[in-house]
Structures are given as C-alpha cells and as structure tokens.
Picture 1 (cartoon, helix red, strand yellow):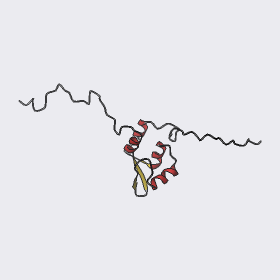
Picture 2 (picture 1 turned 180 degrees about the horizontal axis):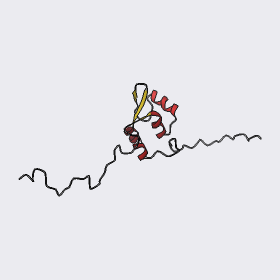
Picture 3 (picture 1 turned 30 degrees about the vertical axis):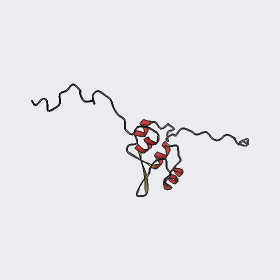
Length: 112
C-alpha cells in the first residue's frame, strides 16, 4: 500500500497556543504556580518555544525575558514571564477581612 505524496501548502503554518506536556494551555494561575523562579525549558513552553531554540536564545541573550545563569543552569524569574505577558506580577486582594477597619480608633487614642 502506498500513500499519496504530501502536497506542499502555500499557506504558512498557523501558530498554536503554548501548551505544556499535558497539552493544556498555560493560564495565569498555572504560570503563578511555578513559584518565583523556573527553569529554562519550562519558561520556553510558556512562550511556545522548543527546548533547543530556548537554549540558543538564552545563550545569545535573545530569550524573551531576562535569564539568570546559575552555574551551568539557566533560571528564569516568573515575574519577568508575567510582565512579558502583560499580567500583574502580584495579585491583590480586596477582601474585607484583609482591609484595616476604618471605624476602629487609632491604637494610641485608647490609652487616654
């Protein structure tokens, strides 16, 4: 059995959404769950880059975000990834339980 020859397409390949090993899209929560620092291959996946290209870009100082060299390893700050994706570096909570009570007297007022 022979297969028909592959036809060359004149359209360029369409980009795909960056995905992790499990095929899931990188969400803001998933990126934040990486912690403060992540390794280069993981950061590359967030940007939709392959491992070899990521190392070449890091070596040449062309990776999309600043990369730190620690010994013979590359490390990438997660805050830099978030900034490159135009996401806030830290989430803020406006929960009433964390807000100071505006009706409470100042600490030194009770002493008089």
